Length: 432
Image 1 (cartoon, rainbow, N blue to C red):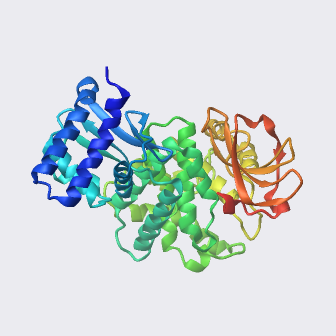
Image 2 (image 1 turned 30 degrees about the vertical axis):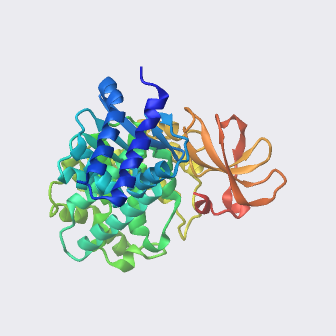
Image 3 (image 1 turned 90 degrees about the horizontal axis):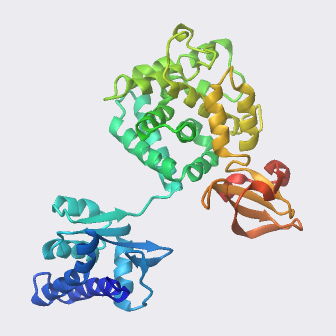
C-alpha cells in the first residue's frame, strides 16, 4: 500500500532536481543522483497504476489527487515553474527514465511555455504535459482575429487559409463541449464597429450550442462551427456602403445583397479541403425551414440539417443585436420569438432542443430574485443539471453594487421574473 508520505515525497524530490540544476549542469553527478532519487520516489505509484499525475486544484498542487499543502520554498518553486510553462498538469507513464526526466526539468527551469512541442521534438514518450485551458473569452477573441484575417483575404482576392479556420473551430468545439454556456455568453459582447466579423463568430458559437443541444457528434460540430463562421463570407465582395447602410435597402441594393450566398460559395471553392456540408451552409443559410427565402433556384433541394441549425443561430444573433430599427431582444425574449418562428422559418425540433438546452433563464438574462435582488445569469449547470451561476448587480434595497458578488443557485425556483436591462440602465456585456 502506498502511503500519503510516499506520495508527498514525489514533489519534494522533483523540487530538489530543480534546485540542483540551478547550481550544476544536467550531467553533473549531483543532478544525476537527484534525478534517480525522484524516479525512486515515483516508482511505487508507477508500478501500481502505470502512471502518475501532478496537477492543480484551486491553486494547490496535487499529486495523485492528494493536496501538497507544505509551503516549502522548493515545492512552491516547482508549482511556479509548472504554472510559468502554462501547464495545468504533468502525467508520467511507466518507462520514464532519467534522460526523459532531465529533459522535462530542463524545460521547466527555462519557463518554456511551448514545452509540449519541445518534448515532442525530443521524442519524450513517457511524460505528457497538460496545457492550461484557455478561457472562453480568449478563444472567442482568437476566433474573431482569425475571422477578420480570413474575410480580409477574401475581400482582397487572396485564397483564405483553410487550416487556420479549422484550427480555431476545433478550439471552439472543445470549449462548446466542455463549457457551452460560458462560450455562448461571449456572443453578447457585441462589437458594432466590426459587425460582420463579430456576427460571423457569434453565429458559429450559437450554431455549436444548437448542435450540442441536438447531441451532434464532435465531427459534425466541427462542420457546423466552420459553416457558421463562413456563412457570410460572400458579403466581403458586396459594396461596403450596402453592407453598412443603416436604413432600409433599395430594391437594387437588396437584390445585390441576396447574391452573397452564391459569392460565398465561389470564394470557398478556392479554399482547400472544404467539406460539402460547409458549402451547403454558405449557400443555403437564407432558405427557411419551409424553403421560402433565397436563392430561389435552390428550393426543393435536399439540404444538410446543419443548414437549419445555422439559420437558427443567424436569427438569434440578429435579434440580440442593436439595430437602427429595433432595440435588442434579451436572450429569453429571443427564444420566445424563435418559438413563434418554429415550423415556418425555423426547424421545429432543433428550436425545441435549443430552447430546452438553454433553460428558462439563459445566460445573459437579468433576473429578479424572490428576495428582490437583481442579478445576471452568467453560466449554467456548473453544480448539477439546472443550476445557475449569477452575478448580483442590485441589492434588495435597490442599491447598485460596485463590488460584484457571484453566487450559485441549485435551480431557477428562486427567480421571480426576468428584468429588462434597458429599464435598469444596465449594460449586460459589462458583467460577462
